[in-house]
Length: 136
Ligand code: SF4
Ligand code: SF4
Image (cartoon, rainbow, N blue to C red; front, side):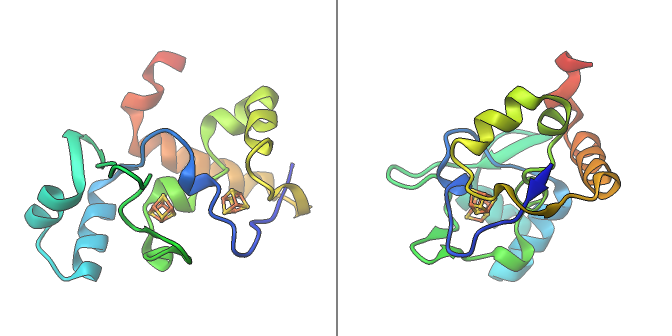
């Protein structure tokens, strides 16, 4: 597997689907924004714990997506920073092919260190066991 994120691209942020956040994500981003966790949840999140996710806005897939890209890039949620090293993508070539249809970074750049990619996928699976229960 080759992968290299392409500068200026925001295609993955514009996809349908949800961005789920871990407790650590919430604490880190709330601190960065300068509000309490409770206020952060009220303003930006929906869903039921432990599967809390960004609330979608009418014309925007993610509240932190700006024209120039992710406004919290350095501290973005685990789900975003781990892409495309998600368990389902490492497990299935068909998922990687589908992802390559919108992600121009797939099949580009250097070969991925598979151990590092697996470690990232494991971290995602541990963070969101509910999302992967059915596949186990
Ligand atoms: S779609 Fe792929 S290349 Fe584009 S920002 Fe996301 S990971 Fe990077
Ligand atoms: S938090 Fe940033 S990287 Fe994640 S979906 Fe939103 S804009 Fe994209």
